[in-house]
Amino acid sequence: MNNRVPGSEPTKETERPLGLDGRRQERHGPRNPLPRGRIAAILAAGCVVAVSATIALRDSPFRTPAQVVVSTPETADAGQPGTEETVAPAGYPRAGTEGSGPSIIRVNPPAEGEGGDSVIVIRDPSTLGQNPLTAHLPDRALIEDSEIGPLPKRGADGRRPFDVYARPWSGTRGAKVAIVIGGLGVSQTGTQGAIAGLPPEVTLAFASGGNSLDRWMQTARREGHEIVMQVPLEPFDYPEVDPGRNTLTVDAAPEENRDRLYWALSRITNYAGVMNYMGARFVGDEKAMRPFFGELAQRGLMFLDDGSSARSLGPEMARSQGVPYAAADLVIDGERERGAILKRLDEAERTARAQGRAIAIGSAFDVTVDAVRQWIGEARRRGIEIVPVSALADDPERG
Image (cartoon, rainbow, N blue to C red; front, side):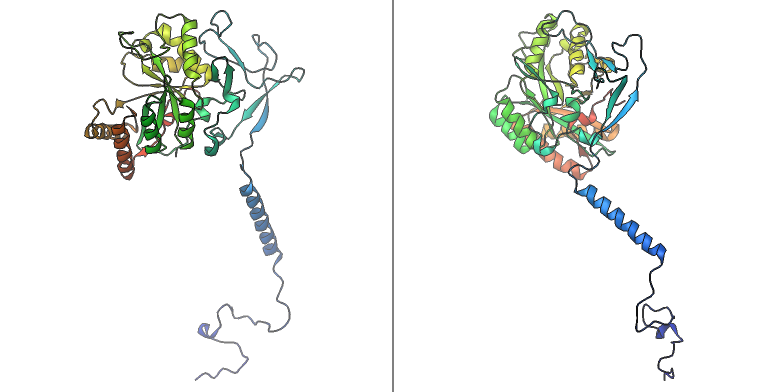
């Protein structure tokens, strides 16, 4: 029986209502004011929430390039005091110029009469790539207009086509496989089937001698694919074995190879780099490769080696001239049969598990596209990440 007098304090924990701590509660009148410390904490929290909401609602939070003025000491060789200069590797001779000396790229030079400080633009790396909604449109800052068409170039702010047109990826550790399917533009039905049937992580390589390339490029970019341009290089037994129109050759004059390369590069835009089409003889010749790689360095392009020649000077040239470089580990459709292609893809997976990464290349045949699509679905379930080929390129500029 409860003998507690009404209105007296409960003496047991079980007799107290939830939320009361035993102190007398007032039935009437205002509650005790909050302590000043608690009020300050609430106001501070409100400010944090307001600032966070403002940032979140911005179109591109934290993505405005910051400009930092850095004092640059004058050097004896500098053309202008305080101007930062970068000497680009020597490429082919410029059209309308003599010689093949190195080009000078001025990075954000100060305006005339503005003292001696150069301006270095520090960018958030996430702003380098294109917005997926406009990935089919070229970045005008990376286009050099020429008589034969648009040519890729480095931007005045230092951005490269390799940076801007590369497809993003997770950046996580683990086994990674890049698959490159080439020959797009040669067969209209094959091109359409490859773009529509392959996951967007697959890199697509366009043949410079193909048809309707600009239309197919835009379609591929809208679907999320990273793309590269295939440039015909001289194989052994040329011209009996002919890569196609405007093949770069070992014996051609530098100006002639330059014009042939420009023709290939001008066929489309929005590609992260180039890939050799054939070229076993060309890639093993230092005299031919040095200006070729010099041009890629000046224009900010990656070189993807198809891996068909053990004599390729690609790695050496990439290191010496600062060109992003990747080399294929294997061809998946040398035998054009579904089972054989799947076995080669399994081999790429074993290579990736052993070495962390692998690059496999193939062509836009229907059987190749179907096998790749099936294998990717299974490989993902086994923990393999499919990445664009740019993700596996060694980039001297990034260390």
